[in-house]
Length: 375
Image (cartoon, rainbow, N blue to C red):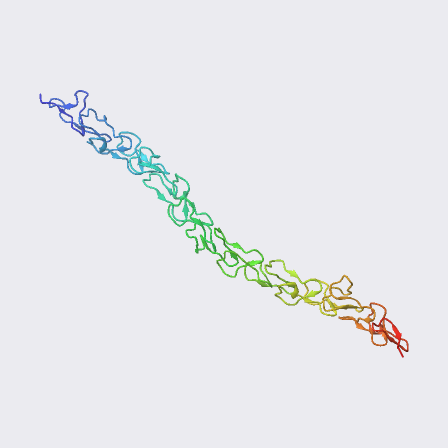
C-alpha cells in the first residue's frame, strides 16, 4: 500500500469511508472545494468550512477564509456559504464592503446615510443633496427627500444639512435659491420698485401708504416727501388742491380748514392754505375758492372768515358791523359813517342808514352820537 497523503488545501476528501487522506487503493482524486466554501489542508467534507457572513465566493478551490470575497459594495451577505451576495443594501443605508446586514451601522462595512445626503437601495456610497436643497435627517432614500431651500434662505453647496444663511438684504429668495442675491426671477430677484426687502425676505414687501422707494434694491422705504402723498409705494403724487400733505402722507390728506381755501397743489402744511380773502367767507373745508361775499351788515377781514354772517364764535377777524360804521355786502373792513352823520346801532348795511346830525351839531369821533360844536 502506498503511503496515504493529507488532503491538499483547496480540495476535500470525503471521510465517510476514508480518513482525511487519500490513498492509491481508495480515494484517488480529491474533489475541488465548492463555491461558497473554503477547504484548508485535510478537509473532510465539501461544506465543512463555509465562507463567513459578510463574504461570498463564486470560485472553487478556495483554501482559507481569507480567500472568500468580501460582500460587494451596495450589497449584503447575511449568511454563511453564499455563492453571490444575498441582496441589495436597504435604501437609506450605505453598504461599503463586506456588509452582513442590509442596514449596517458599524461605520466600517457601512452605515446609515448621514444628514446632507441620500442613499437609494443598493448604494455603496452616499449621494450629496444638490445645491438649492438640504437634508437635516439621516436615512434619506432619494433625491426627492432633499428639502428645497426655504424661502428667505439660500443653499449654495452640495451636501448641506441646513440652509446656509438668510438671503441678502435688498434681495428676496422665493425658495430653492442657490445665491444670497438671486436675479433669475424664479428662485428670487432684486427687490423691485415700490417695495423693500430686509435680510431673509421670502418675497418683496410693498411699501405701506405714506412710504415709497424710487429705485430697486431697497432695504427700507422712504417717508413720502412733504407736499405729496404715496399710496402705490412709488412715484409720490402732488397733494391735491384744497388739501395739504405733511411728510409721510398716504391715503389721508389733511383738509385746508374752515376760513381758508387753496387752488394750488403740492401744499405741505396748513399755513400754505390761503386765508379767505377780505369781504368773503369760506364755510367748508377743502375748498378751492371762496364761497361768496359776506352779507351786508357784517364784515369779513383778511384773516379768514368761515361764516356768511360771522359772530363772536366765528373764525377770523369778522363780525357784526359795529356802531358808528356801516358794512355793505362783501365788506372787509367796516366803513365809518361820514362827517355830520352818526350811527348808534350795530349791523348797519348801507351808507343811507347813517343818520344826519341836527343843524349846528357834529358827529363825535366815533360817530356814535352828535354834539354841538364849540364856538
